[in-house]
Length: 145
Image 1 (cartoon, rainbow, N blue to C red):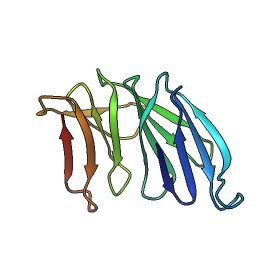
Image 2 (tube, helix red, strand yellow):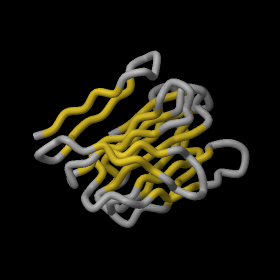
Image 3 (cartoon, rainbow, N blue to C red):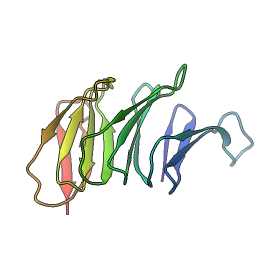
């Protein structure tokens, strides 16, 4: 799985690592590895860049959502609360809300902060596979098995 924003390319590892490359700073067809991010304990299953490209959110089979600040000091915030693997993550258009979809049949809406607070959206009767905000950030769509 890979995701692209502002020339950055992120690829996930099955060991829980994320590898960030940059396409403009490398030979054609070969993104140059910029850094490796470690924090998940299991396979990374979901990635999403914020609209400004300054943050990355990842979800994993370890039930965690991690918010990565890509500039300037590369800090991260672990968001816990899901009881099952995180299948999808999405930023809203302002980057102030993150949605996560999980095998625990819940969607969580996170306010990115060190407190890791979230609101739980229930209603699915099976594993939630995907979650996306509308372009204006006013609507959230999700799908399940």
